[in-house]
Length: 312
Image (cartoon, rainbow, N blue to C red; front, side, top):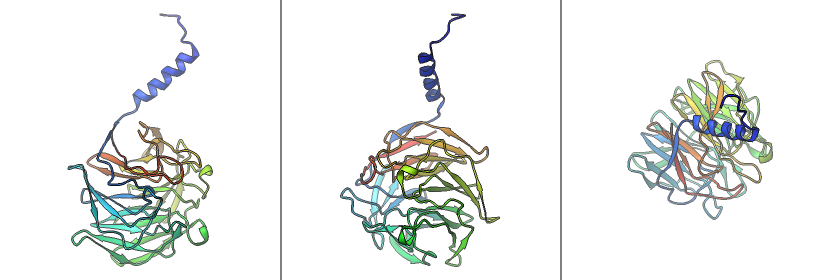
């Protein structure tokens, strides 16, 4: 075979095959959501995944909330939110699950509500409202505090202010604004830094590949390596110190992209794509696996109940 030259079309095929084989991890499925939901968020409290709000199969905003026990592979319904919400981030700080702002009604009205879930009594309670209404934003948690970035506010204007909530004092304060205001982004915290990833300036055809990192210790933002793809309406989850970013949409299509960011090297890599392309989905890590939950399998209003599980 020495001297044999691989034709260009075979070389391309071999390169693709090699890239697939070099990707680590595999996908499986878990029990589906009790019903199809999109524009939800997910967070983990005491080893169980929580989701709340979103749009149901009729495109109606909902107040329903559910909890997933990964060990039993079982969903159960918990107390409804005080009011319907969608595009509302969930986050866990300390021993508490928070539902942060979000959008209300079919007209996408931004809200300033902050709710906590009282697990022992199965009830949601109000805490100090956000400094200003906003939804389609991202939240990271550092040192037990919520760090809220991006999204849009009243008048459908992008919000540049960032805000930190301290559960100990039940107070918010504004901090350094995000360099690139955007909505439908995702945020994740690793190593005391919050990474604001992707998003868009309202228009799904103008998605960003931007990654901007906020350090609460210095109150400064820095620019990081961009995502390999431009995506808004995506979700993310951290696993083993790396951030996995899933899905997203344009005005006419949805993404199956699964890309992984390593904050240590400031580099992105590709990983096995989502079996079900979607946007407006949730992602959460339990027992070294990432559960990717619900979302829209088509651009715009569409819902699925699928739950897919990535294990590296």
